[in-house]
Image (cartoon, rainbow, N blue to C red; front, top):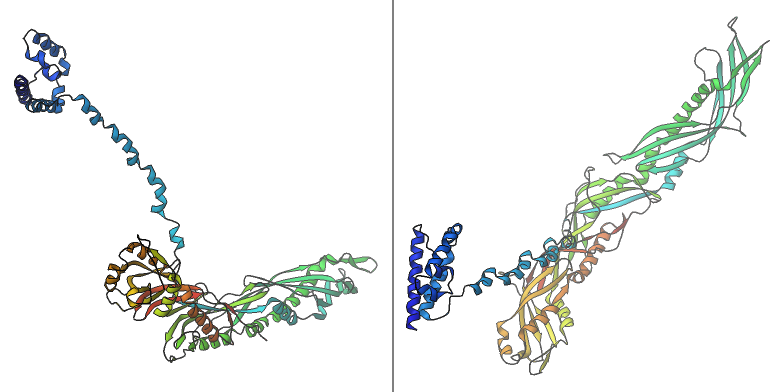
Length: 591
């Protein structure tokens, strides 16, 4: 044992010397260094050392390896430790698997993290954004659709345009050029066709007429005029000529609430020209084709027809203005909505107050079988408690543009008493039982909500759970009141047992799982705020209907609810909310 230790120390000295020489740029070839397992040959005679010295000479290209492979000094230290401790620290080959670290390779999939790919939707979460309700606007747009039946306007136009017309002899050719023709006619129309496209009425006036022509020609020899025909027919009652006059009337509402129509003649369509000639024998046949004077005949009739129809349609503006009656309606609505209306179904004296800020009208358009113009009032609606507010009625402003969709949005204060919250909670918790490790059971017999004002944390709320009739059977927990906009629910999270319940927990509930009790109570402690606000929604809808009574019929109820803020106050939970949505508004047809 002493011999082995001496040999190891000597070898250690050799390696230390080799390391020192290597630092100074020297290269030492040692059999002991290259073959650590061959210790005995290294300590024997010098004859075996000679061939070993030759081998490094042949391996000259490997001279630089010791320089690059400086960690070779580590096994030298191991040999020194081996000699000092007697432990077999020499074998370096078993350490190679540690260097390769095959156990690390299976960890590469962890670096790739293939399981992270399914998690990408969690990072993206594109579906979560549409689920969030859009914030409700604070301003309302009350739209009153004023309608007139298209059939009624059709009837008005048919009443305006005369059904017959006639004209005595008039010259239809120009000047004194030959031939010269005069025309007299009578016409009658058929029912007018009225269609609405956007804000433009398309009016087709079908006309039938019977005419008589007389014509003269100038004698080319002496310049005298002579009659070619004195009574030539141009359509008859049985076989009339046909004309259809097409007009457009584009309607608009000006800044003074007047209905204006821009009437244009689009075209006049004629039937076929009568065939044949107009002839006179004066020794020779002198003839004029009917086609040669057709343009003058038609022009004479067209001009008079256009004037008559345009004049009649010009009266349409006044009739539509009186039918829509927009200005009077706007004044009535504007004044009436400013009167506070009582909100029924609320425990306190609550009033709906409308503060209109702008008024506008929409474009004329077809709505089913009606012609519709929207009268819009924009403003802020709110609910206030207390005595009936005193308001100063503002006069009707000038027409302006009112953007956005129709909708009623009322800012209101919602107050839910702790008794109401407690009743709902008790319905959810009563009968809920818990078991201990000793198979003991307790059951909830009563639940109450205790609302206290907490300035530092205004959303802290307490619930008191009773497991029996005695005061010591009551357990009080306190948690954070939170609101979920998607489900419109209030709930309590992170319940803690209050200090006052310590005695109960230490004695009666000692064998029960306190965390399980908290979890189950927390799962039940929630309230549907949409239901709790139901009476407020109905009351506001009724008040809106009352504010428009006589001017519009209002049906339905507001269903949307947005909670802007809430806090726990003494005896109640109070919330600042917006109640909104669409109501069915219809305006009675004019009598």
